[in-house]
Length: 172
Image (cartoon, rainbow, N blue to C red; front, side, top):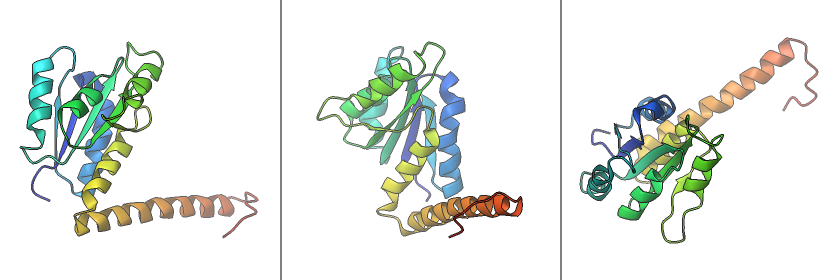
């Protein structure tokens, strides 16, 4: 894929260690993306411009990560028709991450935001790729290969435990 179809945004650069996981899995799958900082509270004009211009710039999905009050994903979703995937981030000002989870999860009817687990940007990247794969056979195959490799790792782990003498019981 040559054209950027996924936007990854975060409330501050301190969120990058979490959001990098989305970028990494998209790179692994061969999906081009853009990544930047857009704060819902400190740069509302930038937020409005980013969200309103996303579809016109060719984006098909936006992944938005935020900690604390976590308004970024919901505000983006309110300004675009594109699917938005929210990544709640456990930040330094967070209430153990629950504030972020609930802020993203509890969107009002009419403004959906897909929500992944706390700090689970990798799943957000995979979900964004799955959305794109509905119209991209090459990406579909990359995702099938990715999941096949996940299964292989589990089976290899079970075999390793068996070889180490653990009584597994089930060997199917």
